[in-house]
Length: 256
Image (cartoon, rainbow, N blue to C red; front, side, top):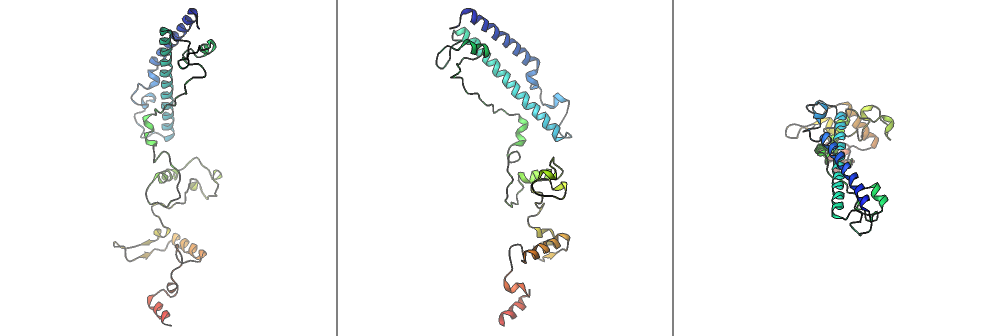
């Protein structure tokens, strides 16, 4: 049980801490959160012409301000709660079990109203800055998939940005690459098409009159098929189409 002198000492400590904390919060405009936008703190009008790294720094600083402000408000609440406990005559006893809180614990944490055994778990704040809204799925958290999907997803977004350069170097990758333009995940994925042959074939407006346009990609495709010993990427053609290629010749072959 605390004596009146000890209670008076703790009350003075708590009041002084409360006044200092309130003054600090007021002078700092709640860590700058009273401003309309974090740009105001650095003199910027918009994010349009800013480097992404600079924007990341500003976002980090805003997150830190939120955490510090929330921590200060929680501390202020605990101080007021402890002062109210002194007024009610319950200060120094655990709210859960009613046992006396050791004087050493109160000297270390004068705002506590629990003994060590019944100290409540620390709550993790889920309040996040509004700027993080652009990082929500599907553009913030995703894994590189192995599906040949035609939809434009988060992986495609990252690859579009990574083509202009990343912090990776060829030595950072497990597979060997020929240039820095390939130093990002799945850099060999096709852009604007699904199958390789779509690079060198075309049709008329009705999807007919298939035409092959000779190119380096066409030659490379042919070489890969020859090395695989097949005529198409999905396997060999039926026997009668291997040689000769015309239906007339196939009929004559069947008649023999």
